[in-house]
Amino acid sequence: MDPAEALADLTEISTQIESALVATPTGEPIASTLPDDASRALAEHAVRLLDGASDGGAGEEPTHLRVATREGCLFVVRGETLVATAVTGAQPTTGLVFYDLKTCLRTIVEAEPAKEPKRRAPAKKAAADA
Amino acid sequence: MRNVVAILALIAGLVLLRRRRAVPPERVELYFADGSSVTFAPDSAQGRRLLPLARRALASARS
Image (tube, rainbow over all chains, first blue to last red; front, side):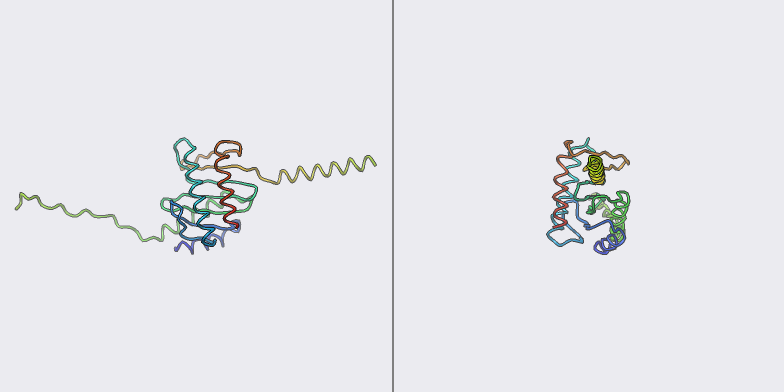
């Protein structure tokens, strides 16, 4: 599924999610329900949050995180190749939001064309054959 | 008269208590691949570092 379609499905299914985006692990937005400037800022902050959370731990990187503030909650899920972020109100159903974000990432990844493993070129016969 | 004031004070106290309970506490929750998780309070080192970032992220999403 196209990332934009996956996000549209996500926000349609999960009424708790106000806005969401999918970005690269370096913080470059791929698809978003927000305008461009807000997407870039949110993606950058989400990646910095993940990096910051990894720095302070015992060496293990979190696969997902939630930050609850009085203004609302921020959810970040790290996939293998993408990062999904969602903004909700102050009291969301945490498990559901994580589930929906992971499902969104999975549908995007599954839609990507399968990469064929690179085959090694047959070894050239040694010059001794000549 | 004294009873009325006492009742009004009690009602005001209950309303304040209810409002305070309604606001969920601020925190940072990290989840790991092995299924474990850890929660940081706002006054912890991780909370002090990550909560401001999250506030900026929320502000940028709602601007």
